[in-house]
Image 1: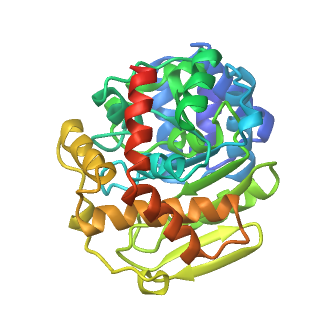
Image 2: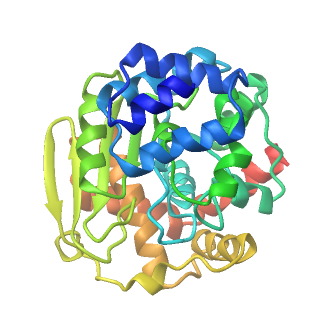
Image 3: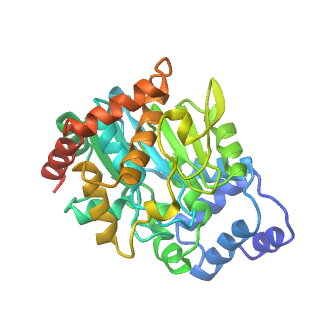
Length: 331
């Protein structure tokens, strides 16, 4: 590791196979916490390359506990995290809206490393017990169209660096890897990123993969569609900049999406959204992310039609029914 670190400090890049071996070594406990922290720091000071990202992803997927849920043709909605905005759990709430609209969702997530509440935090707030038992995951999908994969149960490398990431408290390249390493390899994915270089990186990476994708980025730095600024969307057939007004929604302020200072506070906002008692900003932000996820699955539908589907899921109570059934099955 020492020689490798010297190379990286001299601004050299890893090849795809080298990156794969490094991450495998981390998962196997070959390096101490200080060495891993130094490695992480390199990627805070410069951009990750396509080969490095691909190699790290290769390692994660080769070591994962595989989950074959392909017959469900599920979607995952996820952000890279690390945008520093400390929003409530927007993408997780959007997953429940999507399931309430009739689409299968396999959400891959973890505890918050750079925010108060990650997807796993809000799940635990609801008494969810994490599992990697495929039978239980199928039961959940059959009952309510949604299953949750807690990353450390499926990816040893993620588990190996959990404490390091939490202690550092800043975004790391593991934030970038999480969205690419869903062990179920979902057929569809909507991914949010916090800057334009990552928008390009992921768009390029997804084009060489098998999943149908959407990548979104709010121009003011959110890793989701925040409705606080213009936002950019890339799908296989298009790349377009939207404003909130273009999709028939209001423009909101950053403070309208604040998730609070504790996981409990973020969880309350999450509940308010699904009970349809949230503020306009909180509700609309979840709905527009769900709407673009629907368009990833159904590209022939207009975003207006997709937004109507998402709104119906919430207004009818179907999204809340999914939450209640999900807790019942997974508690």
